[in-house]
Length: 76
Image (cartoon, rainbow, N blue to C red; front, side, top):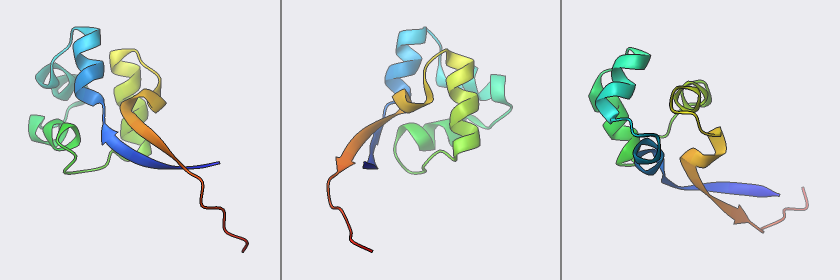
């Protein structure tokens, strides 16, 4: 089954972990603006960064975005 990415759930995962966007940025050596861009859906997290974020805040990488099933099957 294919999925599309819905909205970013990073802010929710940060709140659950008791961490802040500033803490995450410092932990990963990013500028806070980059983390806020992910939170505000201005940027999509590359997989490598999503894995690092999930590891830092203790969640599954799939929990960082809403996953919307795409039922359009192509017969290619």
